[in-house]
Image (cartoon, rainbow, N blue to C red; front, side):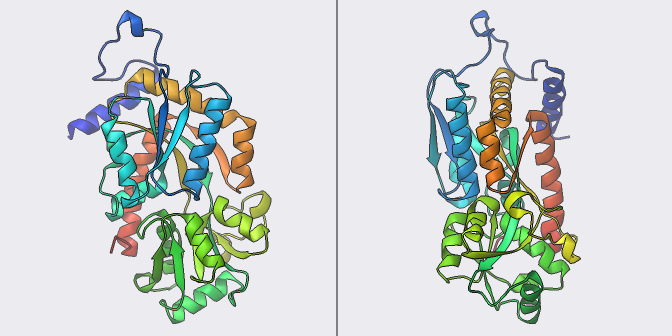
Length: 337
């Protein structure tokens, strides 16, 4: 068995039991009180500004500071778009063992690893929490002649290349898979789709409003406000059940007879090599963020669902999602091209 897999299982067992993790050096008496930040915290965001990943990272930063959860230290967001998030992950690698660095943990990175567009292994890092369950939406501009998801499917079944479909930040990530999965089940040849990648969902939505693309696949925070402003039309949700608030009237694929749910999660990552005390500190701080009213309002306003799942559940999700995404990508033929 792979030694890393043994260590990971041990980590899950020991952290769940509240004991020390395997391979972590014994702490001195001076360290016995546990980790607290003693300098600025760098928050490495693997996408450009304007999308949901960036929005939530900055919301977490604000909550950590306003709730005084970081020992008076500033949290400094650093957007590092490019290479499907690899630049941000490389910064995390350089910070090995240093919990003064945070990163963005989201389903898109897992999909990127599976499809080959992200040249990294997410199992090398430490997902410490999942904070948001994201709803992916399919939308068109308000001037579009396509008025329903049935019309969209019919157009693409007749000619899969007929419409330019925007995703972010690359093909082969979660937004691409979120539309490829139901379209394939509906009988569309998804290998021929005209998929146009943008650096962020903010940019893809701007392109939709400008008439440069026909369809956008995006999470709630970026496209829902445009629908509320009368500039975009939400056709369908990729969630298993309807959302609340602004998404209460948006039907799901499942309601349309296509059981192709696709849910994304968004949370926080720690560098490789952090110890149990560092994990406990951030797990506790982020649990308090998740329970705070301003944070919950930020997430709910976007049409998504605030959640909290800690270190153990986040690791289990990572492992499970890797396997399920491998199966999905193999069935779709949706790897990087």
